[in-house]
Length: 362
Ligand code: COI
Image 1 (tube, protein in one colour):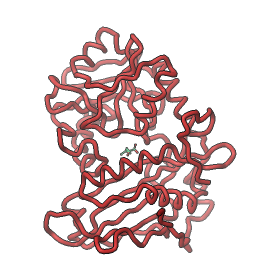
Image 2 (tube, helix red, strand yellow):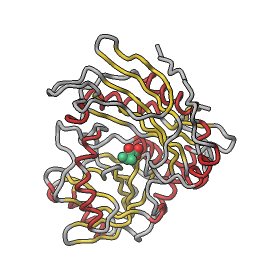
Image 3 (cartoon, helix red, strand yellow):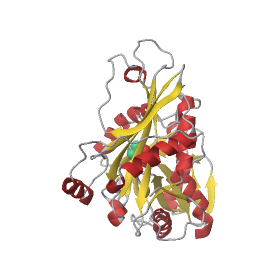
Image 4 (cartoon, helix red, strand yellow):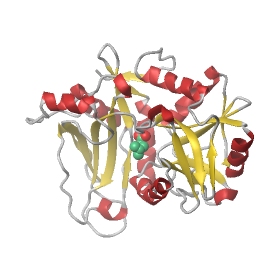
């Protein structure tokens, strides 16, 4: 049975004028709404204390397990305002499923998918005025997460776990917008290995990627492109916060196969839409050598990265130790632009949702 997340409204919401000024230029992940959803799990009671209440700091004992062993998972999805004022989620069931899989991998309790959806919907309803108008690709970014809150030192799964959802009005993740991004191929750092946590959305993956991100920025790049453990003799995996796609001159849309990478919701969306754009979707291992050759001989004509925060962002350059390659024309490619427009069009209700991906909340 779906749990309710009863609302206790904050007596101190952000004043309307201040909210309006935040919504005019929200950035990404800088301003948060008035409320948060939460629930608690213990082995004796299971999930309990579901609710939506004022956004507030957590009170954690310094020995709380998450602070020591990073037992934590999260998700990212968005609520979109349509022109008629209604508010919609995009394929949230897939986030619910992935959240459950990530939790299992991190030995956290599973939150029923219905409860995952109920908590998100309750928060969006409570903070509906915070959902920006669609202008400038703005949306309300939702961050569900779960962490080990038990106080103890000792390595075992925690017996007190907190689930929460917070929300922030958001602009595109990359301020460079349609100009595209340049990726840095790191040979110093890998992201994942067989049997590791590469296909889970856990905080530890992102924490472990920060040094590589710093390295990328030091080389003037926006994000890292990870290789597998075999380095330049092996395969390309994904970018820190996004899945990678290549478009070839013979009409294939190629993306690294699942296994050690994150199963992106936008990744699946793009693979599903590809045939409607004359592209054959192919998920398979992609070697670094094939990337190098394809960019050199022009058989790779476009590249882009996909993610909830990044939507579809064209990859216009790829750099590494001793090389700097331009992808295609060095600008957003035509097919990338068309797929991007379509995904955004569905999300914002501008084109028909022919796959039934939207879920109305308000
Ligand atoms: C997302 O795309 O939602 C992500 O979680 C990526 C990033 C903001 C960490």
